[in-house]
Length: 438
Image (cartoon, rainbow, N blue to C red):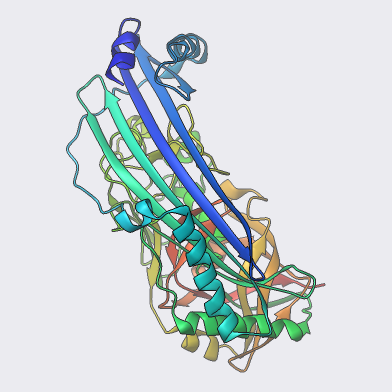
């Protein structure tokens, strides 16, 4: 890395080299049979250079690829991207790594998949199951010309437990994601099976307003829009509805949202972001009051604010490396006035528990709009789940919906945002939402 940095400095005033080594192994057991075990190994390199106040960037798969310098120069000369000097700050260590996950062999991973499958089958012998898991190990190293030269190791273990319908489609599911192996309780398995059996009792809804509970996982579809609102890039562009609204009560006082890059063993925890800014625990909404935006270095000058450690080489649809960092979440965490999950459901006379949606990427995300098909949902009547909802949608705007938060649950789930996990949330009860029936 030092060699590439020194070569880049021959044509630039400042330079930064980012390298990520990735090792992934995944396994799947479907209806008692191993359906595949796959491995992936790759090296990703990104170079950023600054010259005469402009920045250029390029990516490669090798430190030996000198063409990355020429491509970064071309980008600098043609894209005219205003530069911010690279940082060199002290940071605190963050638990991001599990030796157990890193060293797990393919054989051990496949055996673990069967172990989960057998637990499911023991609890529901008449049900078909699909178990998917993946372990990841990454080594991230960042070097720049201002003296920052640090690295850290990262592991992630993701687990999906799925029931299958008679036609082979996914029924109920439960997902886990963290740096360590998850603890799957017998109660969680029983709840999964209970929701699956509700598929034998399909129900249809009319167009109506009703209380809605979003599961922790499904909250990711809504939090994607919350994230867009507090994204410093969108604030600077003037396309966020919360621009110039710091200190205002925008959501219900029953909800608090923060972004915690320092969470021990979180799904996206890190000691520093992909620019070298130390990870932070940033309160975004404190009891519904907007407190902060998420910022990388390039958003701070115009807003006269400090970076929050949220610049990552990622896109909306993947975690593949980008040539320059963009503003994203680390570990978004939803908190608030809490009740047990069972109590949340028990207190609803007629409403809907949503555990899966399709179309999270559609609509005007930056403005908070959503219109999503309910792929997995259950009708609540008199505090009981009575059947699986078919053919319905939910639509609205988060800046209206989040004013109607009544309470949150106590059991946290990994939130999924399209193709990656974005943090953790419990169930959230909204007093009213618009349901579009068949």
